[in-house]
Every structure is written in C-alpha cells, then in structure tokens.
Length: 83
Image (cartoon, rainbow, N blue to C red; front, top):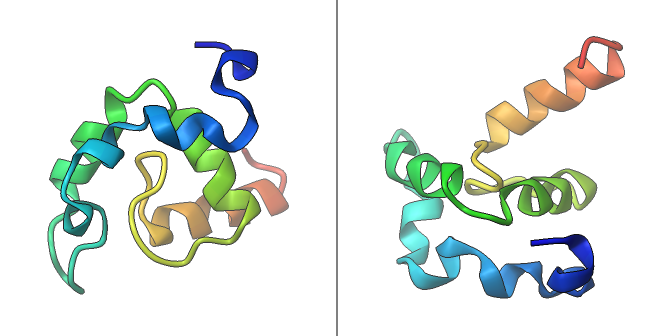
C-alpha cells in the first residue's frame, strides 16, 4: 500500500495492532515482546509506524516491531552515522 493510499496519518487504521489486544504492545516491565514483534513483522504499515514512533519520541510500547530500547539504539546509531 502506497503512502498516498494510507492518507497521511491514516496508516494506523490499517495496522494489525488495531485488531489486537493493546496490552500485547505494552507489556509489563520484563514481559515478553515476542508476540507483538511477530505481529509487527507481517504488518503492512510497519515502516510508517516506526517512522511515527521515532519522529514523536514514543517512549513506551512496541512500534514498528521495535521496543523503546531498540528505537533508542537505532537513534543513537543514526546520530553516530552508523545506520
């Protein structure tokens, strides 16, 4: 699905997480993120979701298949010039 078809911020309407228990994507501290990441990996808007989380500094939950820790590492690598 193209960005135009997703209609700006309307991408979340197509996200698989919208059809899933939100607790899956916001596990308790030390809880498993495996199921959320598995769902994200087959979601057609995964990239848009991750871009949103990075642009808005989302600090909690699984977004675009990455945990907050994963996103923080990715931002650090990008800042260091190591994509």
